[in-house]
Length: 364
Image (tube, rainbow, N blue to C red):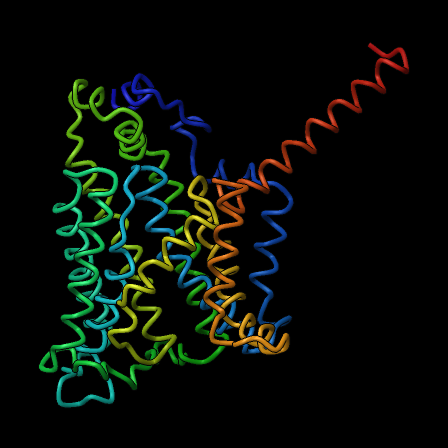
């Protein structure tokens, strides 16, 4: 009934809502499988710098942006609290687990500290959503931005729990099953596996009855409420699901950086997540990962490029901002939208040429 009602609300899912995730994956084109194979064999092709600091870091940021994309793309909710959820999970891993700040860290084993951190960060994201879902548009943005700013200043000024400005360092990934997950190749595959699971989870949920109902609340909340759906409850549940993804990304982030500080939860990174999601595209789950890769490449190499041109390298944020404006101006759907339009144009041209050849050759 929920599936049929979501169609009435104005959203017709494609592919069919009952389609299995395996069927969706099986229909992917050659390009998808080329990317999958390249990611799997990347340790044999790339050096440690590209493997972890570029590709691995991009996938971690892509997971945070993916949680924002799920809220914005499927729920119509623009939330700026997702990076804060990730930072909160990172802080909790350092507080409950082990770090160089021995007077604060509780030194729990990682298999206890990590699940507790994810659960508490998810609860934090859910409560943030409960405060903001009753608003729309600019008001939702302002409430979530206020929560993010409040958390930043709490971390900055609290020395008893969050260690103030210094934060925590010496947070290393665990050794499990005889594998040091802080090593380059194991950490890369750990991040790749988590990113793939998050991507698959978003695709599956978007085609489940809950996801279809959420998209109905995005398109026409008043009609969905008239059909008997609890719009507020669906949106809060969407925050919960998105917060789980952001929390996992926060754990990977603190293991990648080996430290966490108030800057991780600052207003700058919070806005960067929105930029990454929009640049990649809010229409497809792959968009945040594409946007994250572009962001990491610009952030890593634009400084050297600017200095090579005789400009101030500290203005690399200007390059990122200009790139963001150009992409949004010419493609509201981001880079994924550009790619989709190019594919559609190529398909139409191919069909037109095939039709012309059939007509010219006299074939039926």
